[in-house]
Image (cartoon, rainbow, N blue to C red):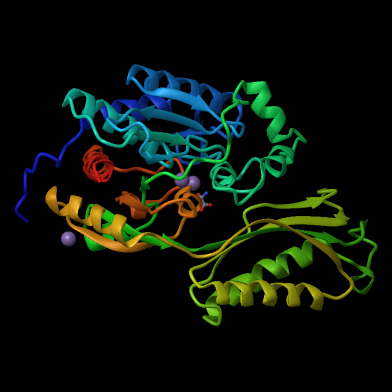
Length: 420
Ligand code: HGY
Ligand code: MN
Ligand code: MN
Ligand code: MN
């Protein structure tokens, strides 16, 4: 459509943005033998994550931001406004990654925020409200077991004490890792409510590409339920033990996985998605019937009532398994979170003013924005991905143009919100 070049429609330096994305992707890089690609592995508060954090803090300081770190290791870079007492406009995302990540998940929102700041400085633009760029700790939840951890504590949904006591598989606590990496900041962890929060993130799915549009104006985030199930069977000889004498924990785990897929396919639980991402048996030896199985169940559903029904159906199935003892441990649980209408309109208008086609869509993935939405009007900008938007895989890829378009819309949106 006709591109309006109003003074508050600003474009960023796409090459500089892309270079920062590629430079950051070198931190925690590894050769992924399955795909033959360079992947990224920066689990929260590992040395690789700490190195990425330090690099980004340096870029924040070079961009003139005043940096503070809170007691959860959340990082905030602040650009002052003409009215320093005004509630800031917040943007940002996360830098921690899953173990088989690409270069974009989370990083685009953080580096995009810094690029917006550089652009405002280059244009000599002063906004009324301060602008802050946030980096939230352990968004992925794959090391300490609860996702969106830093933002959930910043928004007051989870306590800092709960978060600090969480442990990884080796028994390290999050609190200990904050201290070890030097990110045990002193700033107050409860975030003063921002005027608005806008997060730019890759879509991580196929919808924008299917519709042939560049920008997603995100309507909300679907519900998430994470639990760990431990199944207790009995170790027994693989050769001598007849079936009726077996208490096979591995078999029960397999039955659960098959049952979950049947629940999804039945359509009886709405748009349910179910994933068993972690599965381990003990003693994990060829000729011993598994004594114990441990698995994680990740359920997603945009409808809270359907999510509850799915959780109950799984629990009922567990109870129906013969001769098997089991325990369940809830790891994470968030309901559907709708985003703010006015912020969404501001994003859509910015996309229009940049001449970029956009659609509204629900987020399949969890994001820090779902937590900050409890504090202030919040919405997200999605950037289109290639290869069906594959993510949590080194093949994750968005083009330099797609990234620049998303951050252009972010820049214009932040500028307009910061002058309201
Ligand atoms: O699990 C998620 O949805 C996000 O990637 N943390
Ligand atoms: Mn993410
Ligand atoms: Mn992710
Ligand atoms: Mn429009």
